[in-house]
Every structure is written in structure tokens, then in C-alpha cells.
Image (cartoon, rainbow, N blue to C red; front, side):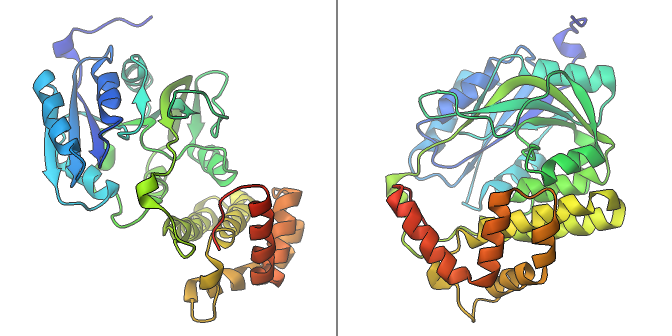
Length: 342
């Protein structure tokens, strides 16, 4: 156990929480941050134009704890809200929590200890996924058996194999790491994009094994029903970011080239399995670009050792006859009772 510093000797943490229409979960999130054993924190609730009464809830929560500050703004997305929080932050350390999620009381105590005792440039707590009732779901990111310093190249490799955690919510950074950086606004894969910038400037990430951050997987709201032509731009952003990481790997980490190709193919597979069939047309430049990439990389699809057999089969079929494969896939998912994009 480490020596406990007095509250005045401790550096302040600014915890930035972007908030939008979170009336049913925000209080649990904020309560978990207020309960931290590391008490020298400020909690910045950035209300991103909520319309369901969340804006008023933010004010009520601030009345209960002087460490909470609230800023209201026009709706601009999570990145926009986080950037407002960065401008407001007074702490020497910066952390983030999504308003749907919640954390264990020890999270910031242990992360600050790792930063200060080990002198690491960034610390990550492990996470788990739970449903809205708090039931554990299968882990997306498997926690390590013990704490370890993951160097930048290894961290990139884990991301490229879809085993790493790119979320800023599970990490704590010294404030100076953010100098000259901000979250890209208008994108939905923003954590991955900004983390790529950071990884070029830091030596690695110290990863703690405890799953202290709880990601709540919420069912899609019935007030936001999808049409058959609905398509989130996140599937465009993941392809663009795959190109960015390929460029970084080929420039600085050539040993990871095969992993980066695998990542690019898998991100494009994700896109091809979600783009509505109605948008798989000659005049859709992005779709045509993805299809062309798959056809140019047939040899990689066949030979890349990091692809699963299932990935390889789907990629080859989609490269050859994407619309036909998608119609067959949609039929298969309907039989299985799963929602699909058509």
C-alpha cells in the first residue's frame, strides 16, 4: 500500500463527462465519480444541448457537491463537449467518463498512484461490459493478469488485432499530453483517431488489471428507430482511421505491416456488412473505394495469417459479388432473428 498524501498535497483530476439526454443514467455515473477515494477531483458536466431534462438534472447534481461544475452548450456531439471540458479543466490530470457508464471507487486512486510512482505517460484501468440491469456481458477487452507497461508498438499491435482498448474513458493522462491536441469533431471513431496522435508522442501505456470501469451497453431507444437506409457514419470513420494507422505503421513500425493489413481488411469488412444495400451503387464513391480495396488485396485476404477463416471467406465473397453476398447475409440474419441493414 502506498503512502496517502493529504488532500492539499494531491494533484487535482479533472473528470470530463459529456452529457446528452442521459436523464435515466447520469445520476449513477456522477455518484460513482463523487465516491472516489481520491477526492481531489473536479467533475465537469458538459451538457450538449439535452432536451429531456438532463440539463436541469446537471444543475441539481452540482448543488449537492461543490466539486461539480456544469456547462451548457448547443448540441455538437461528444467530441465537441469534451473539447469544451478541456478548455474548462483546472486539473493536472485529465480523465473522462461517459454518462451511461460508471466506475469503482478505487479507479482514480490507483491510476494516480501508477502515474506518480512509476512516472508513466498514461495509465489505463481495465474495463468490463454490462447490460442496463448490471449483468456482466462477455469481455471485449481481456484484462491482463497483472499490471504492466505496454510499449507503444505492442499497444498498436493489440489495437490492430482488435484486442486493445482505445477508449479515453479508461485512461488517465497528465494534462501536458493534451497540449496541441483536441478531439476531432464531427467523427464517431474519435477516441481511436486522437489516440493514434498520442501514441506517436508517448512511450507506452501502463495497464492495470482490475476491471474498474463499467461500460453500459444500452438497448437502442425506441424513439430512434432505424429505417432500412439508416447508416451510421462510424462505419466510414473506422475505414478512414484504418488508413491512418496503416500510414503510421508503414512509416514507424514496419514489423506491424501484416497486422495493419489485417486491421484494414477487417474494418472494411465491418463497413461492407453494415452499409445498406440501397447505398451499394456506382455513384457511392466511398463504397466503390472500399470495394476496390478488397479486390486489390485478394492476395492479402488469402495469405494474411492473422485473419480468421470466417473473415477470409466473407472478404473473398464480398470482393467478388458484394450486393449478392449482402442479400444472402441479410436473409441469414432475418432467419436468426437479428436486425440487419438492407
